[in-house]
Each structure stands twice: as C-alpha cells, then as structure tokens.
Image (cartoon, rainbow, N blue to C red; front, side):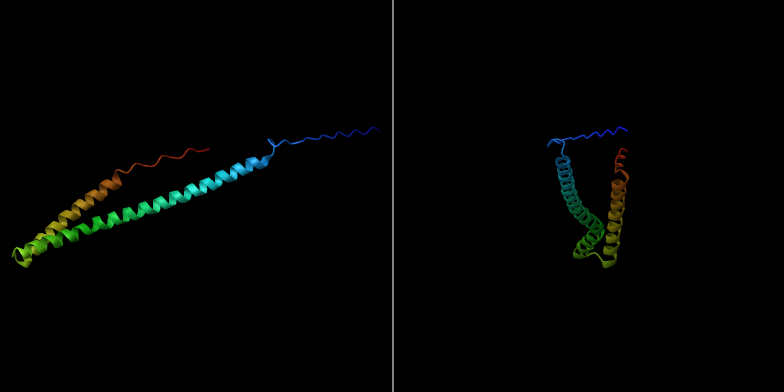
Amino acid sequence: MKLEVDVNVYVHSSQDDPRPLLKLILEKVTQMALDLTALQSAIADEDTVIDSAVAAINGFPAVVAQAVKDALTAAGVADAAAQTAADTARADVQSKTAALKAALTTNVPNPPTPATP
C-alpha cells in the first residue's frame, strides 16, 4: 500500500491580503453614510423653506382681505361694503392660490426608475 501526501504552501503577498480591500469597503461605506447625512440635512432645510412658503401662500387671502377692508374703512366706505370688497378680494386670491398649487403639483416630473441590478 502506497500513501501519497501532497502539501501545498501558498505565501500571500500584501497585494493578496483581503484586509486592504475590507478597509477600502469600510471607507466607502463611511463616506456614503456621511453623504447620506448631508443629504438628509439638505432635505430638512429645504422642507423648512417649502413649509414657510406654503404658510405664506395660505396666509395671503386673509392679509389681502384685511388690507382691502382697512383701506376701504379708512376711505369712509361703510363696513358692509368694505366686508364685501374684502370677501371678493379673498376669493380672488384663494382661487389664484388654488391654481398655483395645482400647477406646482401637476407639472412635477416623475423621478426616473432605478435600474435593477
């Protein structure tokens, strides 16, 4: 009976060491996390601006109506006539605001569909 034993020894060079690759992967993952954090912060800032703009737009009808009523009252127009003019101005601003909102939501392009791997 003959017994053969093969022994193979492989000496890994530093280029074959998987640790530099793992280090690179960890660096990239860390960079992606930092990029994501910056993106989230930018989105939060943008949301604040958008929310402020929406609040301002929604407040326009009341501001315009009050300004019209104050101007008419200061000019000596009876309170009922001032209220009617203010209501008309408010309705006009509300209709323009609704048209603006519709245009902003209707003409938003759809984001591209991500490619599947």
